[in-house]
Amino acid sequence: MAISFNYHEQKIKVGDSVRVHQEIVEGNKKRVQIFEGIVIAIKNREFNKSFTVRKIGANNIGVEKIFPLAMPSIKKIELKRQGDVRRSKLYYLRDKVGKAASKVKEKNLFEKSAQ
Image 1 (cartoon, rainbow, N blue to C red):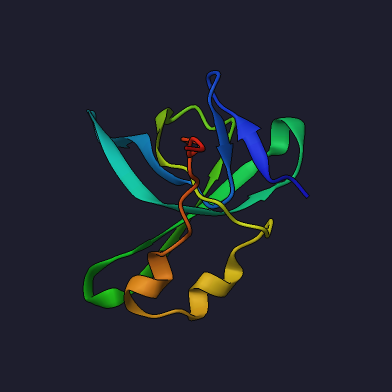
Image 2 (tube, rainbow, N blue to C red):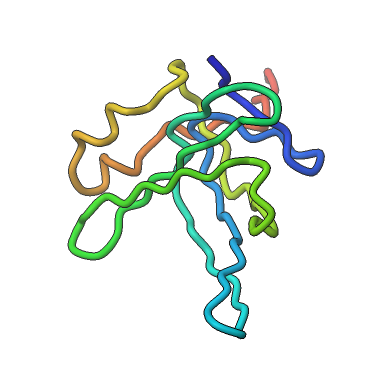
């Protein structure tokens, strides 16, 4: 089971909050659509790797999107927050409602100095 992947020298793990910039082609127009949420799963290995991002949409409806890592329409992945989780798949978030559905413990990046 994969629990992290590297994307343009950036390590993204399960539990992280990310913004995925995807290019959408509609007729002869192109635009960039941003999907922001929590990485709840990373599957497969090497070239076939994909990751699932979940967000809470309008009317508290959960929306999940699966992105293959090698998809050419992904322009950028921004890391918003690093999560601190102990599981490789966060499917239990599907059963949560409201704020609890998007709540993952945040990783403490700064060590507290002893006084």
